[in-house]
Length: 134
Image 1 (cartoon, rainbow, N blue to C red):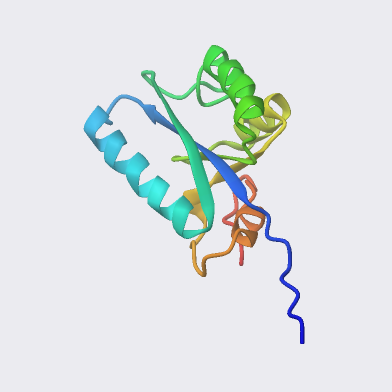
Image 2 (image 1 turned 90 degrees about the vertical axis):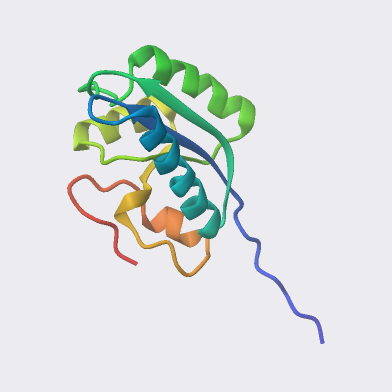
């Protein structure tokens, strides 16, 4: 008998964090490492981590527009399938980033990453104001 294995979608994730007032670079580093572990446990290959230092998140993109545009270029070069933020985005930020990056935007803190399966990434797609349901 032959066993047919379904094609698994391999998630290639880019992690993004913001060093803002009240968050030290050491706290951010620890938080990004935790985010990397959560993404890996959910089945993603983390291809890069991007951080930016700002006093506070920007209204349109959370990160600066210039950084967001650089990320857009990097996404195409690295074949990124998911962009994961280490913080909660506003509804407008999520929409603006999805439009600019043409990529699904995730807020990994909104979901429980078990069992290990990339379907959770699609289920956790940023839904402003609501936690994703499994």
